[in-house]
Every structure is written in structure tokens, then in C-alpha cells.
Length: 315
Image 1 (tube, rainbow, N blue to C red):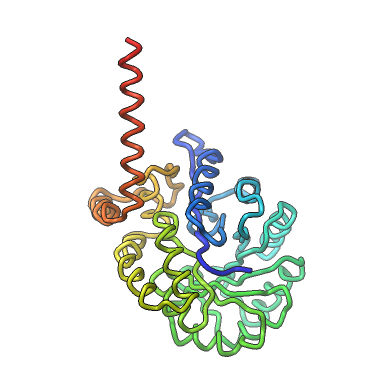
Image 2 (cartoon, rainbow, N blue to C red; image 1 turned 180 degrees about the horizontal axis):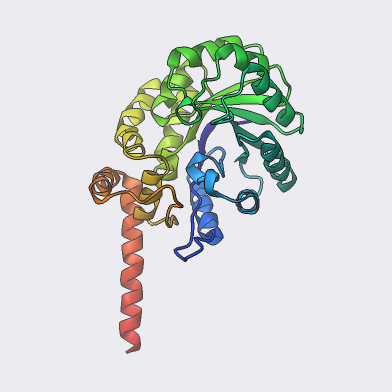
């Protein structure tokens, strides 16, 4: 169910004192991504600033995503928390809203033991919605070992893992141990998408696809078809973008990038702050080399000129 390119989408906010959700902007962004051929979509992940969304906001973002997608592709909603009870609330809400599955980060800060991790994921999986585990030690302070993943994969509702450990040997071992299960191993790092797919991974939950979805889709589809020459060429063409998305803490760079190419973004909620001028200049250089980004900027400029000419004609 979960394969190919699944952008982990940003959450646009309005530039007002309350930093309200920009639902119209969110919907426009999703429609654009759909037009680029993405294979799935992930609202309310780390890239969507889930840590600073209230539970009602979280539910509204997932609901708006489900409604806008309208069944065209799977919606994998982020519903993780370091509080199991809160994760249950978010997971039930995502299920009731019509999400096709949930992405659940391993509990951060608490650093639960093995038994606690198994009980946490089992409790959520028992809610009867497809669940993808999210392993990202850099954010949680704890790595989920391959043997633990293999044990959890036996649950009929635990259908995959977003692997962001950065350890290719670990990814290979997880795939090896789960070959007998209907279990998807999805890259959580854009720059490791191709090697993970070469090992048998199914795709990527992507930050870069917010900015350059067409080439991300082309790379993954080439890899799935076994056209490794084309996939490798696209990987290296995309490599500068992959690096630029992490010149500061995610989602600081990507939120600036989507605004620069004419999409809805808005401010970041504290404790995250805007990209500084030097890094913004670096990002602009990378974006200038992306055909789709240049086209978007040109369209935006053309629209601005058209508005100006209309105003002049009315004088």
C-alpha cells in the first residue's frame, strides 16, 4: 500500500498573531503535489511541525488532507507521541477521518525498554488501522533494532517502517528479517532512497518531494522498473537539493523553499525560527537549478505583472 514517493508535507500557517492554520494553502499545496504524480502523502509528520500542533489542529490537517486527496492516493497520517494515550487519541481520529494508515514515531525522551515499545506499538496497531513504524534515532535518542522490528512486523496491522537511522546495514537486516511478511521498508532519508530501494525498499517518505516532486517520482519509478542508470542519474541531479533540505533543522529549510517556489508556507512556530540570510542565499542557488522551481517562480512573477497591468488599465 505504501510505496513510491510520499511527501512528508509541511503545515502552512497564516502570518497573524495566532499563526492559524492556512487550510486553503495546504489544499493548494496538496493539489499541486497530486498533479506531479506522487504515490502517497504524509500529513502531520516532523516536517509538518506536528510537535507544535494542538490535537484539534492535528485532526483538522489530517481531515483536510483526506478530503483534498479524495481517495486518489493513500494518506499516511502522523499520529505518534511519547505519550501512548495521546497517540491513541490521534490514531483513532485519523482512522475516523478516513486516513489509509498511520505513521508512528517511536516514543521520544522517555526511551522505553523493549517491552514498553512492544506494548506501545501493539496497543496502537490493535486499533485496526495499518501502522508504519518510524525509526529516527536522531530525534528520539533511541534506535529500534532489526530484531524488534521483525517481532513487531508479525502483527497483521503493522505493515511497514520508515527507516531514518542512516544505517544501510541495519536497513538490509530489517528487509532480510521481514521477507516472509507483507512488510514495507521505506526510506526516511531522501539521499538514501536509491540504495534502500536497491536492497528491496519500497520508496521514500520525502522532504525534498515538497519542492521537486516530479524528479523524485521519476527517480523512484525508474528504480522500481529496474532502470538503475536513469535512477542513478536523477539521484545525483537531486543530490544538491537533498543536502539543502538539511542545512538547518528540518523543516526550516523546506518551509522556506516552498515559499520561494510559490507555494503556501508561512512562518515556523517556536521553538523553530526562520532560515538565516546566508543559508537562504545557499538555498536560492540550489532552487535556481531546478526546472520545476524556476517555472513556478516565473509563473508567480508573471501573475504579479498581470495584476500590475490590470491596475494600471483601471486608472
